[in-house]
Amino acid sequence: MQTCCVCLDEKVLIPLETCSHGICSKCIVHVFRADPRCPLCRDDGGGRSTDYRDDDSYSSDSDSSSESSVGEQRDLLDETPQIDYSVIRELSSQYLNHTLSGHSHPVNAVAVFADGKRVVSGSEDHTVKIWDAESGACLHTLSGHSRWVTAVAVFADGKRVVSGSGDNTVKIWDAESGQERCTLSGHTGSVTAVAVFADGTKVVSGSWDNFVKIWDAETGAELCTLSGHKDWVSSVAVFADGTKVVSGSGCLLNREGGDFTVKIWDAGSGEELRTFSGHSREVNAVAVFADGTKVVSGSKNKTVKIWNLE
Image 1 (cartoon, rainbow, N blue to C red):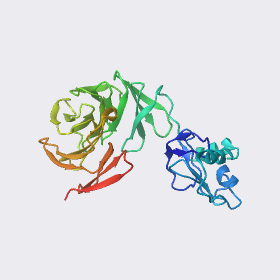
Image 2: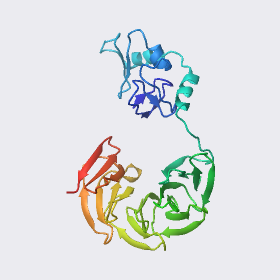
Image 3: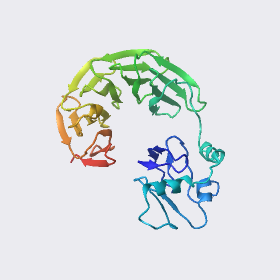
């Protein structure tokens, strides 16, 4: 755990490549190294550099003692100067295009249409919303899920969107009218991930029920179930040529002995082609290289791994 140098709350920090100051997810701000407008960079002047480390410790060039107690470190943190939050808000707002307001609960997923003109979002308020990316206006609210929306994706032609939900279903929507096209039922646990085949003919989903399913995007029929993960499926992706699917798995409710693998599947037969083991915690995300020769996975163990298929 790290300590935010603005609010001093113990929260997960947003990684900032250009700033030496850690800003927590409560503050949601970005400041820049050696920028005089940054109150932290400005107030840390005089030759003293501050370092907020992963182990909750504070170090300073002017204080090199290695025997400082945790309590003394906290005292040093308490000396952080008063922050002008209006300056920080000004810095952040310079790069803000739109704030799309309309969901009544947290937003779990977003995706962008290929033409860049619209955005889709899924929320714990059970709805999917389509937004105008230029004006920020809400174009459609797609209602039909009975529980939180966990995942969304857009068809390449921009005519349909797909959503996955805690109600165990996948829904395909008409992006122009906002009407529900079909509901894909078959999972027995919350749907956690969805992806669309490049040609728009099929959809793939992953679920808490440990299965990956491939569906006909026009009829909603289940084409095949990919069985092999020993725990919940957290992420899915499709190879560009549509011949294979990749999935990542995790550990539901922190149970011991979770399935922390990445699997490659034949999209036609449903056969398991490869299993990559190496992550020690949940696999949270997977993606495929454009040429189909490698896949990449991200894990709760703080690592990203690239796997060769050839």
